[in-house]
Amino acid sequence: MAEDTPPPDAAFRLGWEEWVALPDLGLPAMKAKIDTGARTSALHASDIEPFGPSQRPRVRFMVHPVPGRSDLEIPCSADIQDRRDVTSSNGETELRYVIASEITVGGRTWPIELTLTDRGTMAYRMLLGRQALAEDVIVSPGDRFCQPQLSYDVYHSAQVREEAPVRALRIAVLSREPNSYSTRRIVDEGEKRGHVIEVIATQRCYMAINALAPEVHYDGKRLPRYDAVIPRIGASVTAYGTAVIRQFETIGTYCVNGSDGITASRDKLMAHQILARNRIGMPTTAFAASPKDTGNLIGLVGNAPLIVKLLESTQGKGVVLAETKKAAESVISAFRDLKANFLVQQFVKEAAGEDVRCLVMQGRVVAAMRRVAQPGEFRSNLHQGGHAEPTRLTRAERDTAIRAARAFKLGLAGVDLLRASDGPKVLEVNSSPGLEGIEKASGKNLTALLYEGIEKQVRPTPVRRSRRRG
Image (cartoon, rainbow, N blue to C red):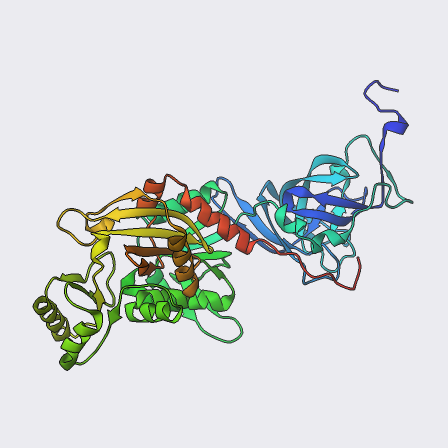
């Protein structure tokens, strides 16, 4: 016997049927058929979709690991190793993607290659061919389960969610400004995490609206199935942008911010009504349409100075400080002559040209900064020349920011607060908050936290235990 040939009692023995795990793919338990007559190994996969750059192509697919359980599907992704013709036992040849993964059987782990194919009609979701067997493996064709057995019950526990590998996602960023800081950060961070990020100009999307197969098209082609959409909708295209997001919601795509929340946050009047309905502190606000109501409108808010604000204002534009009652009447008259919608708001003097931007992600304040207006300016927006610095929030400020984001059902929100003498007041809830100022002020990688939230949302969840047992 040659020196490198292990003795018979050291051989690793397999039966024709064994329990295996593919940890790289997040598959902790599967029954596999061991077939030395087959050269290659195969894994049952559906919805097979190549993606990624040509230099490093990847493939995404769904696996139903338990025969007869179509309700349990595990999303997987892997690098493409090859694409080759494979002839099945019935003589049919199919061009298949080839991936690499580690396999674990009976406490032993080694690398193998797998071809992806639809084995939905087969009794076994996986076939292990002779190329995947190490030299010291002995297959006993008359035996089954020579190695310890596993259980499909693992798919009914939180373990499959907590231990699943981060799957490469295909994510769309709806933005007209691909070169803006926020959009570039979202793209760069997503690609760094192994995801495929596509920036889509909102107004170049168009929709096929029907009951059975609603679709979103872009530049003459139907858009692929995305795992998530990150909206960066400009104020000037709010109506069309939210229509596109509604279409993605209809398809079932996870949207970081939903269409209703974006619409409400952009309409200053509706936003303040939502804050009032949820009893969230804000500066006293009034709105009216008739020119005859100017005096009463000002009286509802209080004495000058006060703020007159366009309903569609962003980045501090369309916001005027009226220091006297006469000045307020003049501004209101001018806005009405322009047939512009506006509201009148209490000026919080003690804020002294400062506000606090809280960044809320998935119901948690992840960063905050204090924005200070430049001398002679009451608007603290960074676009108006203000500067930012990190700040510590009180519990009341943190709770107010979280409640405000929750009231609009936003997964990502910039909540602007004023520090008033009687507690925090919400100025605005921004559904497309900029990332540059707050990342630099806080020193945190907030874009990475955004992706952590998305990955948790789209990862598979444990399913209920079925009465049928595998």
